[in-house]
Structure formats: C-alpha cells, structure tokens
Length: 450
Image 1 (tube, helix red, strand yellow):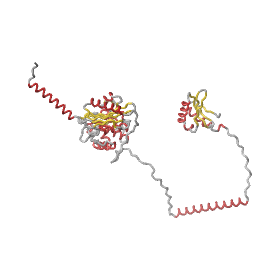
Image 2 (cartoon, rainbow, N blue to C red):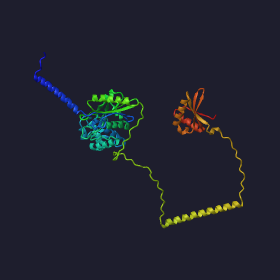
Image 3 (cartoon, rainbow, N blue to C red):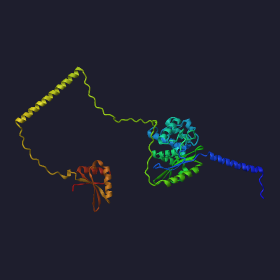
C-alpha cells in the first residue's frame, strides 16, 4: 500500500493547483475580445462577420491610416518621398517597436513609410504624423476626418502608432474597409506590405507579417498589430487567380493562433467567393463637414467664365482731336459720293453704247497624265497570311501618319503570298512616304499606275 503524502506536501500541491487554475481564469478574463471580418475584395461583399462592429483596440493596425494619409499627402503635393523629415524628441521617445530614430536626426520620408509599414515602427509613424500636420494631436484630427470620409463610422484615433490610449478604438469592419482602400486607392504603394525585409535608411528591417506571407499561398499583406489590451490583430489579403480576399482578426491569443485563424478565414473566403466578379473599386473619400487637408500645391482656375464684349475706344473732347475726326469724316463722305457718281456714269455709258466683245477663243483641253493623279502607292512587304499583312499595314500607318493619312490599305493575294500596299496616292506623296519609311528601317518600294 502506497504511503500517503504528509499534510504539508499535500497542501503545497493543492495550493499550486489553485494558483494555476486562478491564473488560467484570470488570463481568460483579461484576454482581448475576439472579432473577425471576411470580404471579397473585388466587390466588397461580406462573406463572414463576427463581432465586426464591436469597438476594440486596433493596436498597430492604426498605422494603416497613418500610411494612407501619407500616400494621400504625396499625391496632393504636400510632401515628397525624398523630403527630409526632422525627428522630434516626442517621436524619438516612442516605445518599441521602433526604428531607433534620434532626436534632431533628418531622414527621408520614404524610409519612414517603409519602417512604419514593414517593421511597424512607432517612432516612424509619429514622425510621419508630425511632418504632415505639425503635431501628433493635429494629425489625429486628420486621421479622424479621413476615417469619416472613408465610411469608418465606429473608429476614433488618438495617435499615429496605435499604442493603447483611452478612446483610441476601431472595429474589424472599419479596419477591413481601410485595408480595401489601401489596396485600390494606392496600388503603387501596396507592394510595401508584402516585402519580407526592406532598407529603412539607417538599417534593414524585417516584416512583422513574414510568417503568414511565407506560409499562406497568395498572401501579400497587409498589417499586423499587438498590444496587451488589443491582443494579436491582423488585416490580411491574399490573391488566387481572379479572386482576392481580405480577412481581419482582432483579439488573437498569440501570433501563431492569430495566423492560423486568419488562414482559416481566408480559406473560408476563397471557398465562398465566386470565381468571376466584376471589380467595383471603393469610392474616393469625400471630405464632408470640413475642408480637405491643406496642401502646398496651389491650383489656379484659368477657365474663362464670361466672354466680355470689347469696349469702344473713348473719344476725347480736345479741339485738335475733334478737328481730326471731322476732317476724316469729310474725306470719307467725299470718297463715297465720288464712287457713286462714277458708277452712275459708267452705267449710263453702257446703256447708250454697249460694248461688243469678241467671242472667246476655243480652249484645247488635253488629257492629264496619270503621274499627277492619285494612282500611285507604296508596297511594304509580302506576308504569309492576310492577317499578318493587315496588321503590318495598320502598324505602319500609325507610325507614318503624316504621309500615309488618307491612303487606302490594300492586301493583294498572289502566288507568292499577301502583298501589303498603301494605294490612292500621288507620285510625289508615294515617293516621300517610302523615303520616310526607309528612314524608319521599313523596307518599301513605290507602285506606279496600272
């Protein structure tokens, strides 16, 4: 018979068990709420949703908006990719994840964008916001204006990076909407989100989403996020054939379980989405309730709104000018009277003694030479098929429009193939066209009448 453990040992084991159970319960209680959204990116159709409108902490998914506004600012001419941004103490002091920027340092905007999108660097995100709006608070106001314009009705931003802050909230639906806008509104920058690593100016950084990009076929973005309050978040997009799916997860327990859940949701999306759907891109943001962000580009409207009738030149009342005007009027009146009198005299003379003119001499009309008519042409080669000949005729006509415009493209079949000809030209035009085609390294010769 097995001896019973002494009471202190049994008490220790029991205490350890209770602590483990308490920790498990506490961890479950403190776990971030779960939310998910899956859409067909082509049409925006919702394929799956769970707690999609629950306001939760977005964490670094926030940087999707920071980047969207950065792309918008570049488009509007407010800043360029090569603009050197001065790093503030506030930006340099942001906690990790960070690029490692120093206060007073200057770095190109393109490197800040790369660091924010690939490494999810908080210092880079703050620097972007301050560069565009002067302060992070002003940039947050711009973020909220943009969110409203995009239809993200349940989102409120308080900072550019996504670190937990009271009232800084979003939803799975709104972040999915933002991901779709990034994809379609700024496709020229979308490749940033699929880079496994990139040069961020002061060092090379690796992608926080590299495991899903490597493991899931067709995955090419978009953005990860994590804080204790948010859990492990991810907006992901994948393309297979004609289909593209966007899946969003809030509140993952770990990066591994989050990635597994996103893969499951992407599979669900590809399983439910139709094979062929017309792409309906989302509408561009309409900034209501306030002016759009002010840029540095000045646009001047030079369109003529009203055509004004020219004003008559004013006549002064000075005596010498009046004398000139009166003298000119008298000369004109005299000329008119003289012309009328001469016309009357000529008419009367014609009635009294009409002029007899000799009959006109007969004109001899000779036949024009065909060399001056439009009976010449240019041959540009012989081809194995009518299609090939017609294709080359069209290509040549587009290349030499100045001389071949108005000519007739004609394919003539003979025993040796299909002749490609331009017809209906004068000899001079045909010679000029052939010389110009030869200068373009196109073999040709002129064709005479008959």
